[in-house]
Length: 294
Ligand SMILES: [Zn+2]
Image (cartoon, rainbow, N blue to C red):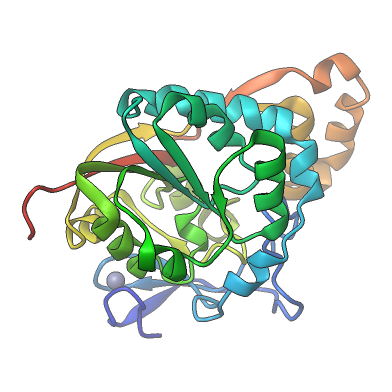
């Protein structure tokens, strides 16, 4: 298959065992972990899904993610941890844009720390939740439409978004054009050159139908560079979770051992214990808009 990044040849990186016939579930908390067939660009080594050509954008507008709403307390703790890693790049005179602001949890933490916060979110339900509960300025429209008239920003944030995008290359181009000089792009995604995805290959837990693109540090550096941004820092995106959530995910990954996880979940005190997870595969990327057009 011709790669969408470089229009180059690609090789099959993972062959899917199941054919996904039903509509792809794009909700953030979906338990549908069928693996699509994945290809790897021979030129830049980007890994992309057989579904990269399907437009998911319209499916996102109708997303209602009740399960996510239930998980907001743990999400909030996670976003606070994330915020502690990015806060040195935020200040009271910054205009900040978050692309894919979803239910507004990160926005609710950032808002009081910056001059202005704008969230861009396709899901009507999530956008309304964020406006109602956190009094956030959320724009509920497509990225192309938004950037047509958008001002310049000091900081643009994308948390676990880039792998979902229909056209991340176009998005990086739009971001490059809408950052002020020396403005910062902060985003998270998994690094396919890390040890865990290399060992797990097609069984890697972040591979799912709604994730279209799987990057590495090297090709991200390249995609940023051609859009006038310099990748200058990479931090680990450590996740916090509680045992209940962690075990429910493990039950899906290892159904044979489900009974063990279910047994431990009988103990209420265990359920709420929080654990930090860092498999060294999830990164926070920091890129600076360059002064000079390249
Ligand atoms: Zn490529």
